[in-house]
Amino acid sequence: MTTVLLLKLCLVPSLIYLVTLIGRRWGPNAAGWFSALPIVAGPILLTMAIEQGPGFVATAAAHTLIAVIAVLVFCIAYAWASGRFGVFGSLCAALAAYALAVAGLQLIELPLLPGFALVLGVLALAPRLFPRMRDAGARSEKQANDLPLRMLAGALLSFTVTWAAAGIGPRLSGFFAMFPVMGTILVGFSHAASGRAYAVNILLGMARGYYAFATFCVVLSLMLRGQPIALAFCVAAGAALVVQVLSKRGMVLSLKRT
Image (tube, rainbow, N blue to C red; front, top):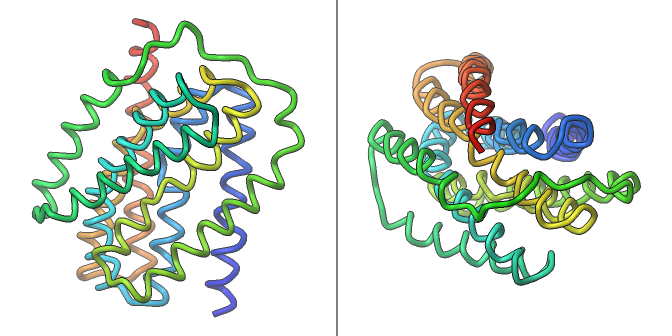
């Protein structure tokens, strides 16, 4: 239990710290792209696998895959709401949209591979649904003092999601694993400190990077049905990294066109 608790309290905040530094060094699109890796849901699913068993997470990961659509709804809703509201209002609108998307997606029961095809189609469409921004936004130096708050918020959200999983079953746990922890923390703090354009471009980078996350979920769900937990997570993470590297080229080409 000590190892699981350390994963919950340390790993996700550390990854939030890393993504924040990436954003400050290479800009919001890079931060969004990197945060689309399974750096939050991956540790959450790992702790679920340790606590609930591989069969539980094999089912949960299939629903985490479908929940990518709900997170894309969150990203698009925040991007548009931020044109009229501040951070709090934008988060409320985005989380409400996310909750409605989750409620709707729970009515759909798709096999793993057709679900993967649906997610890929939505991923291809999502970047076109964002508002057009004139620039990427400029990072404010005020962000230098908010890292401890980001990490604390990330730890609390991660702990809450994994704690709730035991009582809600693998289907809802899969959706909860995809709760927009990174979107809420990274985008909310960045919007407050550096403005709307910076926040929207982080979200756009996320939307362009979720191909790797979808791959991670598919491979993990398949591997956990017959392989040890450690091997399943290593293979899934490796597949996600390969796809993310390949998607980087596509993101760069897309940015050059805009």
